[in-house]
Length: 394
Image 1: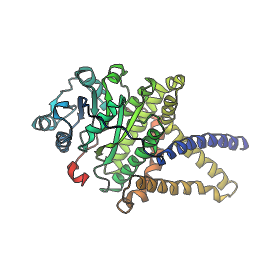
Image 2: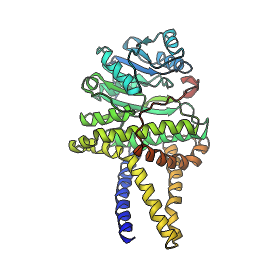
Image 3: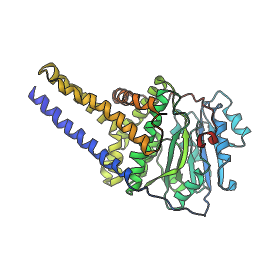
Image 4: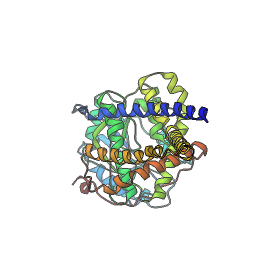
């Protein structure tokens, strides 16, 4: 029993060091935000929108893109319908978007992007990717133009939420995105580290596309971030290039989506982990730490539970339950701080604040499943929230 306790203590120390690493990097969010200079030279962009049965929402995205405060002859919009059995394609045509029909079987967004990158013209300076359920702030292209003109070949915009207050799940998602914006991306941007791509509202230059390896996982954003690290390309975080993203409404939908995210992260670790460690740069090691998250989540929770169980059951030391209680409290505090940093109303987000610990701890179970069960199934999340960019900005 003593040997087991010593092993648990050593493992807990390792997990504590991992936690301290993210505490230190997260603190940098409180530094003055690094600003990207404004440029008058307008780059030419291709906007790429993979779409799978999105007839209800894609129209508002296309409307918001037509209303960009950016020269209309400097960007083209491409919709890529895939696995559709609705009117997504017709809506895109009615909105005057270019349609690229995906003529091969695809199982994920990454495969769709790979198909597009192989078939689209290289006459563009940059390529911007959105999800079909998004709507976009009118200054988005201007701000991404600044980033590309400043020398960044990859840039992630700020992800806000279309529907943060619909349900407790959508509220938790919004808070999670505010955490990523602040403690992951803005913090790194402030000290000159590389940010991470977060799914939608990001830009990559033609240089990166030409040097990009095939996308193999269900988390194309994480995989692209890792490939950038291996290419020594720093990802900018552009906090005034805003995308409004639709969040899942139910725990069941959330479970499916987060299971895909965790499974994709584990897959990325298997494929790229060794190369990241061999690369030995600050960015590659930072990427490796991110890919370790599902393992750390599960390992930390299991060890904490086992150690507490031993002390409570065998030695009647009830105070070992305190770390579990503390974990719930810390989750609430982090949610509140994230909202305050982003200047969001605590009152309007009270559902998410109170239930955020459930959201976080359910992810431990999801990560555990991802570690033991190989799952490459892409479960579509239905999007139904029809709202215009003007309403969100107001």
